[in-house]
Length: 158
Image 1: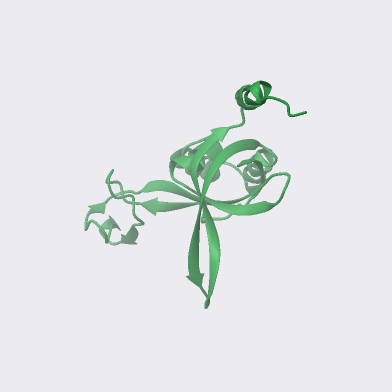
Image 2: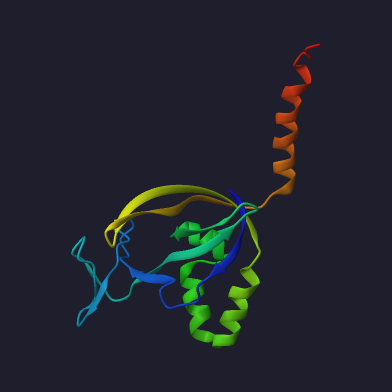
């Protein structure tokens, strides 16, 4: 999908506290000993901020909400979740909102996967980013020219 960001909701759920184990990255819960991961059973003194962003992505046909997790969120935001957490803590709310506003209408090439989920007694489609690339006009034009070259060798029927 070639599209642009229409909206990223600026809220406290843009990243979550995740387990620091490389093979886990599940949500941790704060307790008296630190941050406990119920999945792997380990407790850490701090957590790893990890993106879970829902963004409205639009193209010339329509708009859909796409979930961007971990490194896909990094590609979308232009900074790692740790950097964004620090940015959000050290800047005013209006500066953070200006950052989100600067992302609007930024073009991306996004490979999206759809998944049906049952929620509130109905099925609905949820979309997840699988790959995120910055918009590259030259590469898209080369691919389009390659496709057009295929039609040059087709004989014309009289």
